[in-house]
Image 1 (tube, rainbow, N blue to C red):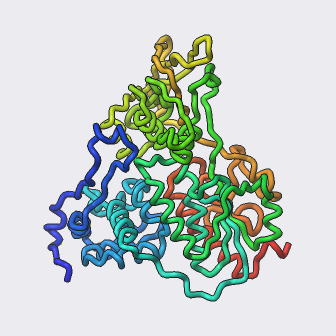
Image 2: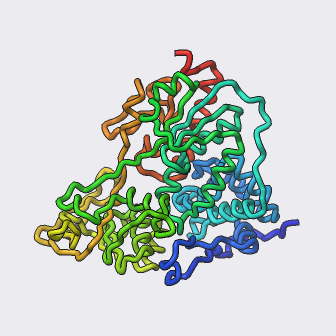
Image 3: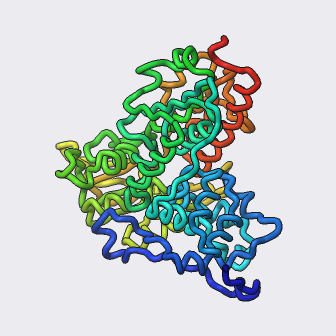
Length: 476
């Protein structure tokens, strides 16, 4: 029987910190930084939960997890049931438990947030998922009569995986197409090993395949076949192809050697395992002084990766202040611990090169903050005459991504906005063509893994409603 902890004692307890690799050790390897809870730590943390009658935490969970229920199962030390509870709505718990910004989602709504010590929901989710994997616990397979209608999902990132899994649980035949040679989308090419081990991504994808989802890699929709051709073979389509086209600042010198987009840099390191060269035959050249432009999670990933690959100094160059940084606080904290040097209120205006086309420096302007812009953050304004030179020999552009138009061009009647993202109905994720749905970064731009998971869930329900009511692309 679970030990009963009086509410007053629960509220007095501090949040259990996550054990981590020492920062001086981890900058020399690509092993995961947070080490995870022990069973004792997980139970102690779970006992802090007040089991509110009206749990606000669930309002902040796009994956729709019954948070109090799975936490209570941890209190009871029934970790298998806790895992199965999460799996009812979240098909990627080991992933979302690691990379979901819980501080801005479920934990933000925890009643203990008022005391600045919310329940560590993400850490508990990760613990449960890891325990289940290590103890060979699997979710139940759908006991449904297979439906005759077929759905195709384009893109195997978090939105596509979630939609495919939810539809398979409903009995649909689901094919999932991935352009790259490994499924996972941004989970495998974008997020470094030290934040999200690829073996975990592979495991959770295999669990989704157990549900009956057929994953086909090296299949480029828009080139191999068009969306219009898919519409003749499938009853519904979910487009979750991400926003994989890099963005640049369009400043002089961006065509020099050793200037990378974050997409290329992280894909080489993560998916193609350049960090293990020459064991893997993907080389990647690292400068002694690497500058990453931007301050989102991708920028933190890039700067921390450059450090691990051999940069003596790794800089983050950001035009706003520390308060406006869009990356997770945990990622910024880890970067600071590891010695990443931050240049805030700094705008690059030119990359300098030598006569061989190699980067030798970056000219920057100092900035000051003005009135808030449309994002709600104070607008950065250049300070005249504040130019200075930052000595670097490598630059990584991490200022965001944009939509690759290859799929949109092959989809008749599926409209996009001026940025190339699909126009959808927010409540159903339906595009402007009946039977075609879309979600994830291809409708939001660069966003979080958990928001993509939420899109996949909403789309799966809407697709089921569309098909159950007699709809089908093949009828047209």
